[in-house]
Image (cartoon, rainbow, N blue to C red; front, side, top):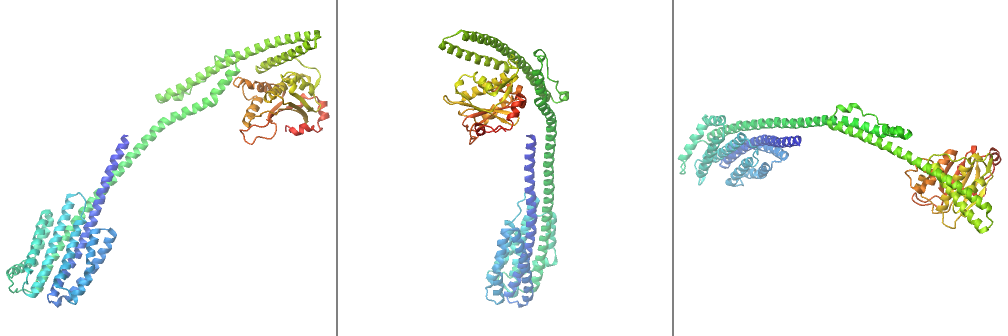
Length: 638
């Protein structure tokens, strides 16, 4: 905020200096335009006087009048171009009053215009040009510049009054006396000149007043005063004994002297405007440089502050990424693989000591991050112990259930051998079936906890149909399962029970997903050296996302401890498949769904038995056999 306030104040100062610079520059341009306008006024005054003499009967003025007109036209054209470029509206309007000058000149040349009208036109045009200087004056607040512009304006008024007097008296001296009203005009012009000169004395500097005094101390100025005294004597209309040419020469010289004084004053004003413009330019450049310096210092400090904060934070971020991506997972993995007694004593690595010498906030943040890591490791150790204890408890419970179920099965078998009543024997068979399912559930619990099942193997081989029938005998609604067709195949007895358990879990899932009254079909066929089985249901099916999650569980990518209990069968199948080297995958039974969120018409579970589980002689006999029609309908696994 302090930097912003400094920049705001600097901006205000820059705007103020820019305004002063613009005003000084504009004042200089207006002074130069005013001086050039006075040159035009000077020539118009000369033309005004010569025109007055010509209309009074002095034809000898025609050659000099023609030269004066050419100078007026040249200066007028140049001023018109400058005004159009600078867009000074007051000067543009004043120059526009000269549009009727060619018509007035034509009337003067053919003597078709009235003398008062012609001279009035020149007086009006010159007055408008002088007034334009006031309208386009400087808006700069400098007092000396304002006084200079006022002095220039007063001197222009005095020069205009003298020029009007020169033109008027030139005609009077040509005629030899005052006509009615001319003396009043003469007296008014002289009074206007004296008034303007007094105003000039009030605003002009000492040097500028000295320049005016020098103009009035010349011999021509003295002769002008003498002619004016002579004119005062002829105020009653008596003849005036004076040469018009001498009056014209003397008054013209005095007018030129006043114009020279105007030029000097204009140069002083222009020089003052240039100095103000240069000063404003320097101040503007200084404030702009100050603003840039403040901005640069602020940016530099911000960069230094950012780097002093960013470097430790970058290092802290790097350590946090290392903790999250490597250290913490490796520590947790070590804890999970260690024994419960060792897991409780494992600690995370110490933090990087390079952060200890940083800012207090960064050091505290690093310590907090290490505390988080320590807490996470402690929780992981606790979870490992709890998981190990929970697994051991489940395994102990599974072994107890398994022993009880085996005793129950032996008792049921003994009762079946003694029972002769068919109805009672049927109920014993149902009870035997329930006990068999209970044994499978107990075995599933042991499989999930990583325990080895009790040895129940054959020394020889078993047909694949026997494996399927054994699996069907361990499911609840076994009457809805049918082995549609299976190519002959022998399986090693060592894998009989685990393979039967795997198929039982898949068949039970298919029965659960199928509506009552629909069969679950089992197919088997050879696929090269492997033997494939398919358990097909016609239920509601699964979405693509559900199929992907199910296959991930079948591949053993998830833990059964974090999954819903209805998916425990998938983890049992995945564990057995990993032991036997069997590949299991579920797919849509019929055509694929139209969208990823749509369900297919049933699910088919495909089981691929590797060559080392299949009897070599049976595999060799069936390796080149064609699959049965139902298998071709389902489609091969590969």
